[in-house]
Image (cartoon, rainbow, N blue to C red; front, side, top):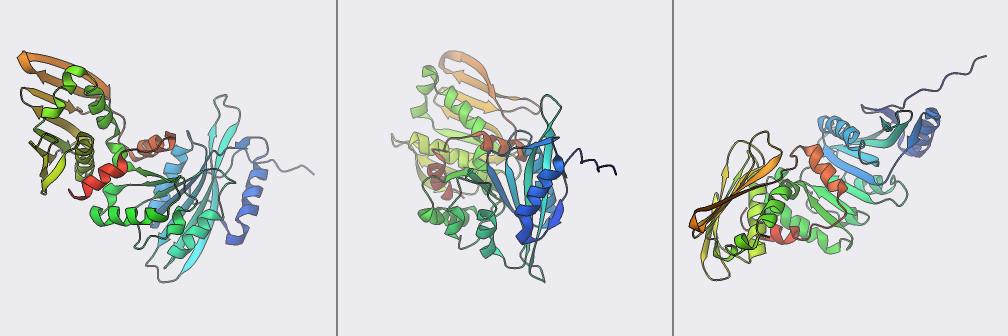
Length: 356
């Protein structure tokens, strides 16, 4: 009798193989046994994703497949249907496999998928914590808005909390809710707002620009700034404006829908405005001082941010800076690649609350 051949690959995309909740660990072990020697398991972190609805679950499964090409992890996908007529919990397991550089063997990452129907927020901590891969760090990506109140237990084991304030319908109340929940969070918890990440390269370009002593001399005399932003990205522009104000020590005087006025450290008035235009999340930043203008902008299709500096005496200068990518998977990969804290984020968020 011939021995059945072992499969050459593991299950990849889709919801995966249905499993009973109490049999997940055993079925994952069996999944690896099926692979024989054609695949090796890889994991450097736990990545848990919370989302709502089956469409989001399918989208996130495809996103996890792209993420695991560069970041080996155990993925725990938690989808919820809070308004489902019948409560219940379902689970699936699958693997995302990619050929090694040598091309002879696959490197695979596990995915455990849960669907929670009906009121189920209380189940989330137990689901996440009971299925972590040993003592590897936990990155929790919370998609959508935080519940009120936030269960502080969620943060107990989390090393990096990823979210996107661009998705908040009421940014001010959500930021205050998040800040209140951090009172009991462990000191190791790092906040990673993808909306903050969208402004990473513009912030780096601004910082690099004013490292130049000829340019830095004008910082104390700035009297206005204008930030253009893509559709739906006003909160991104407000965060960038808040960061600028916090770094330069400006105090908010008045705030409106499309702009604000600040008082500089010298007591001068600085006006700020955000304008929506088609294009990237942050399209341009223009800073104006007496006799000097600095404009950092991104042209369509360009991989660079352009700086145009007009200085007293008719002098002109130009520079290029990396622009980064704006797609969601690029933003999340950027965050998974970082090991440091976002040192100025909470300060900028505090300033931004008054602008929202």
